[in-house]
Picture 1 (cartoon, rainbow, N blue to C red):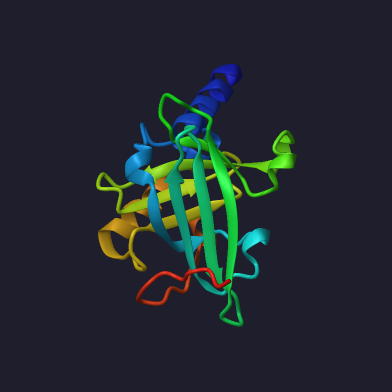
Picture 2: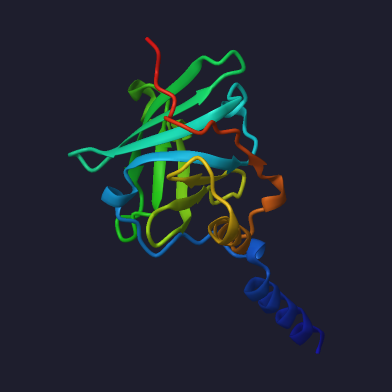
Length: 186
């Protein structure tokens, strides 16, 4: 009887509690539609964005070799634009929802630690918002095509993160100015 109870509880928690399951990506991503500019709406705090005070934007461009060029920009406390350029490679060619991103120099691309997980775990049908996270649930971003996301679309984005076991209470809203995205100063 005790074995039955333990087995039942284990099966129930795996079925009911999202954090006990692995992170699930969306069924598919059309990279051509996903390409372009995205504004960060909210994120989990992380060490590599500590200098970003706001106006965070990501731009994606599909390359002819199947990889994706990535440019992340944000405004620092002094208003200067901080830019990071990277490349993403497709990990799951069935769904295109699992990628690995590298911002380290190409010389270090052979190191597994140079690549970070980029999993699309939520995506609007019209590609107006996306939720990106990591399978260990340490990283999470809510992105949108506009500088703001509210109401039902934001609730759906949050639900896709929550349903995947992400602690959405850790999200920090990103300050965005209304108007054109920041551009790199040379």
